[in-house]
Image (cartoon, rainbow, N blue to C red; front, side):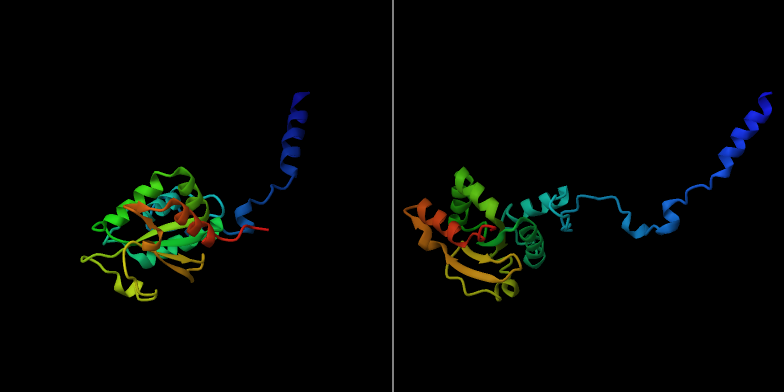
Length: 193
């Protein structure tokens, strides 16, 4: 009748040893199971796919000259992003008080070709210099600055490559596009072979 067949099916179902759950083989490390939160103060090394936190953190580096920002922490964020993107770092030293700093921002913002070249090759990081915060300890590791804005080109590891007096890039009441673009091209990272 039906009963032996049913029993046979049930027994057959029990005769195969259950596959061991993966957790038994590799104990779960609960400390790694954090939900990702877009905390811009924590640069996340996330391979070649920048997380929202990374994108926000990199955007914040160039948002404005902010006396409250910590350039040491900012440089660490910039180094992570530069290594990931095969870029160099451009430190833009100045302050909200500095009219030429605002002119430089407007010049780059208003020129799509220069902006896209800059963003493809550099992580642009503003460093505040003002009465509120001269960032003297941070800036003491770099050559002396004679005027603002001042640009330092760094390798992805933070090593200084070039110190650029921006007065040489000026023309009239603004910046000389040819000279500025030549500067960006000269110090861009070498193209990958």
